[in-house]
Length: 148
Ligand SMILES: Nc1nc2c([nH]c(=O)n2[C@H]2C[C@H](O)[C@@H](COP(=O)(O)OP(=O)(O)OP(=O)(O)O)O2)c(=O)[nH]1
Image (cartoon, rainbow, N blue to C red; front, top):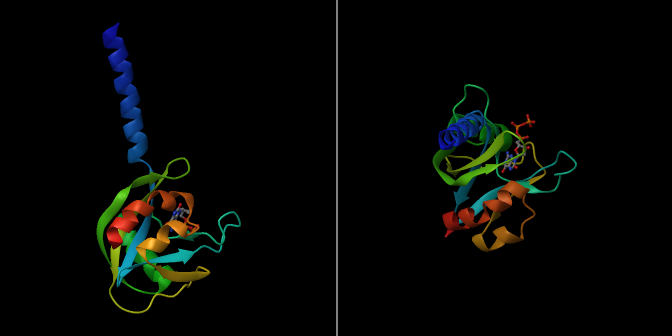
């Protein structure tokens, strides 16, 4: 009996591991300059328009998360970035997706809101008062640690 319970638990665990392995990753860049973090304001969809997030987007099939981050920063901000360590844990998004943030720094150029309403540079003290997307709000303490 105990063996059957263990086998069932082990099968459930294996299934959960497979689910996590197959999760689609959304990457975000925590770009820091002079002790401030770059945030951008979404323009769509309507439910999230006006809220703030970090530059980034979905990792394409076969693409490395760090490569996706560099690609997204060029598309969204028009600048190259150097990618560092992950900041905080993976945060679950809807269904099979997770948000993964990496520290990043500008390699050159001035970021512009090419696909968003606006960009702004935030101090650690300003982070809690921003209208973040829900998953980004979870990461505010980790982002503050990065700035302090
Ligand atoms: N880029 C980005 N997306 C985030 C963050 N936090 C968060 O919940 N998301 C969500 C919003 C979206 O549901 C999803 C990524 O969507 P996206 O629109 O930025 O990605 P994408 O550029 O690859 O997609 P698309 O515009 O082609 O539809 O992740 C964040 O900090 N940065």
